[in-house]
Amino acid sequence: MEPASTEKLLEAFKILDPENKKYLTKEYFGKLMAEEGEPFTQEELEAMWPVAIDPITGNIPFTFYINQLKHKAKIYDIAEVIKEELAQAEREKGKKPQQTLF
Picture (tube, rainbow, N blue to C red):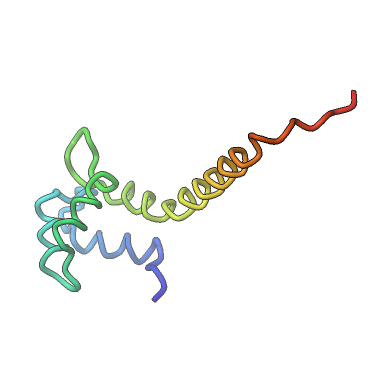
């Protein structure tokens, strides 16, 4: 199953925000995620909150959250490359440094 497009996600959030506040409360969004469609478990909700919730307001500004969701894969791809480079550096630690000619 393909992830929803940014436009589809924004459209869905707008339906959930008829007052056009541009955010959802944690309580409201959590209730929807736990009770509608394929319900999230409490553990899944707890894993989602740090990405979804604005730490200052305690709400979920959905345009920010959508951006977080869409960039998540890229961030993890970059992290995987860095992890691999660090592992390679550790493997090469025992080798003598290459001589460079200047």
